[in-house]
Each structure stands twice: as C-alpha cells, then as structure tokens.
Image 1 (tube, rainbow, N blue to C red):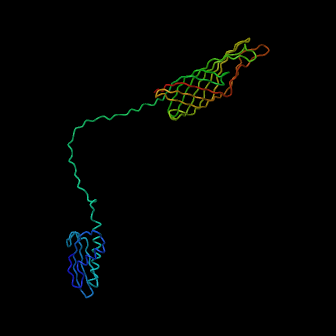
Image 2: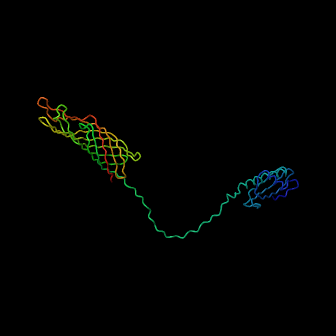
Length: 304
C-alpha cells in the first residue's frame, strides 16, 4: 500500500493488518493500493483511495476508487481498512481455482479427404402375414340328426389378426332311423350344412383363443323305407350359432384349429316319410331339436 500519512494517521502496515483481520481470509490475494490524504480543517479529512489488482494507479484495471471523508485521520484509516478488506474478499471470489482454469485445447488438423465407396445397408425383410387360411377336418353335430352324427368339413378364413371371418361346409354320415312301433318302417337321413362365423381370437401365449358368433343354413334330406308308400323330403332351415375358437400354430404356414358351438334352428321341420296303413295315416319319424351343438377339429394351411 502506497500511503504517506501525516504523523497522526495510522501507518500503511496497520491499515493492511486491520484489513486482513476484517477479511478473515486464509490466503488473501495480493492487492496494490494508493491513497492521497488531504486535511482542509482540523476536523475535516479527505482521502482518495485507489485499489488495483495489478498495481496500476488508475486506468482501466483499477478495481476500486473511493473518496473518504472523516473527522480524524484515525477514522478515515479505519474506513480504508474496511474498503481494502472488501476488495480482498472480492478478489478471492473472482480468482479461478486450479480446477477452474481451462486447459489448452489442441484442434487436430483436418484429415485429408479419402475416397470412400458407398456400401449398401442391409435391408431387413419382414415376412408377410398370412391372411388367408384353407383347411379340412372332422366334425360332429348334435340335435340336427336323430342321433349324434360324425362327418367331415372344409373351411376357409380371412384372418386380419386378432379377428377371423370364416366359412365352413360340412357333410355328415347318413343315419337310418326306424319307427319305434314299426321297426320295418323308417327313414334314412343325411345332413349338409353351411356356416359363416366371425371370431375374435387374440394370441394367448402360443395359442389363438377367443369367441365366435355366426349364422348358417342346414340341409336335411330324408328317404323313407317300408310301409305302403315311401316319401322323400328335402328341407332347409336357418340357424344361429355361438361358441369358442382355438388354434395352435404349427410354424408360420399351418395350424390346428377347433370350434365348439351351440346352435339353434330358426325353423323346425317335421319329417313324415311313410304310411303305416290306411287307418293310421302318415307317421312323423323325426324333427330337429330346438337347440343343438357342433364340434369341428382340423388342420388349416395359412397362405397369402
């Protein structure tokens, strides 16, 4: 500190010591200060104080310039110590720590351009979903024939997963039924059917499981035997159906499929196939049940 006070003023060493005590810094940053004191009256003192971070007395690098007025030189000396302490704290806060000093960065020289050949990227091919299915299998019906009737079926389906819209055609083995009172009189029945159903069958693990509902038409042909006259009847009736659907895929192109349904005919025909004689008239041999069931199990190929 460049300070030449009159005899009644504190020395520069005393002012700096008091400033360091007020700042209470373990490692204060070095500062340069210059002060000019003027006494205009016995109790009127004025000091111009400049504090610089690099020791210059003025110019752009001076950090603090203050004018202090007091009644005694001791009073303005104490004020100078406070100003120096504030400058020490400010310098300590502004000075970067070693970890904050940026390291010099070296920019590598640009590498010479090299001629590269364009390499085609591999394209992943996603297999198309097989939307169409064609299949065949075994079937059985209950209620549309005099007794449970096995048969075979063929089916097709459009499969925008998890939905399924299918068409099934089935034919059942003929059944021969005798009149309960006259075993020599009766009829032979053969059933064919067409069913259309819609299903919702999401994947459950590896299985496709869900429910179905639909409608269809059944055709029952019957030929009588025995009696004085024999009749032949062919009738059609609509039916509604609802049930469950399941499928187990065998790879991507095949699956085992099964449906279990409850059916209800909307029309119930009566089959009169033979005369028991002039006095007894015609005899009713069979009439479909008001509710029945159907089971189909098969294998289908999934294509396109």
